[in-house]
Image 1 (cartoon, rainbow, N blue to C red):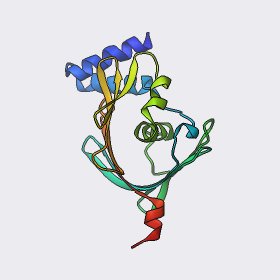
Image 2 (image 1 turned 135 degrees about the vertical axis):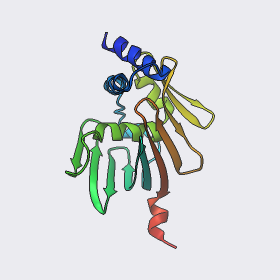
Image 3 (image 1 turned 180 degrees about the vertical axis):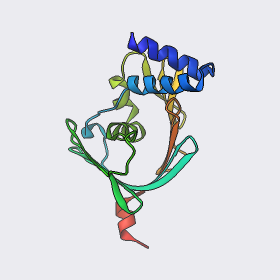
Image 4 (image 1 turned 120 degrees about the horizontal axis):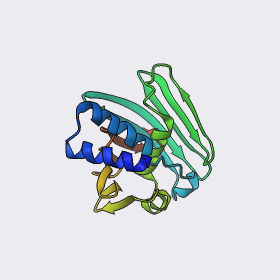
Length: 190
């Protein structure tokens, strides 16, 4: 029943028929019903070791932060730096997500959503798709990943260049531009 209500609210919001207050309620209902990816680090076939520049947009608000992400067969680790401080530190071993948050981080920036977005961008579609609930799908369409609930496009990930990605969480009204560099090449320097 909750999923039906979330789908109905989402449909109204996407059709532009909802009032601003109902639109916020629709996004909150959708956020509660969205699948949160919790794939094991071993589902990523190639280890990651990246430095990243993350450009975040939510409504009129924009922010750029730096991040380090590493994933091997046993753990996925992410550290986000903002304003010269560690804002968020995540460690995911496939069973438990440990997170340390700076006091200045907004409560809406949730470690589970950050890990889920990371996996949506970097983990293989073939590893993600079978874990989605009924009615949800993830497919590659050219160089774009498309996450759908039924026919509604919920999120897209574009890969304009190697080591670049743009995540659009359409239903949650935010985007994330990711520019990465291999930590090995960054450490080598000029």
